[in-house]
Image (spheres, rainbow, N blue to C red):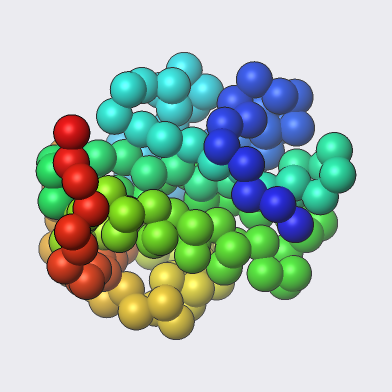
Length: 159
């Protein structure tokens, strides 16, 4: 498995993200869906990575800068047929490493509260994320769980 920068212009990632949006809409009401479509993933405050095995897209994730010290995980997704292979853990470790390299002191995320999101919440908790209140643009919502991870103080240059 290889983590590559980008991938938004590939049909594999487009299909992966379409499945992601469909699932979010299936399990949460419209006002509680905070997923980003392809166009919204192309904004300058966001960096995107995808996981590949040969020409097969296995998963993806993005990192959004909320401010100079706080990042947010977005669009974490593993293709259904590749779940249980460590794809999500690989993406998460890559995004955490990127956040540390950027000098963030905190990394946060929003995920769903329904049972279908329990595997994602377990993945984040195993990495040290703890539940927190809403952050950034979010408001309290019974269909959302907010989590955060304190990052080690870094000396990464900021430009």
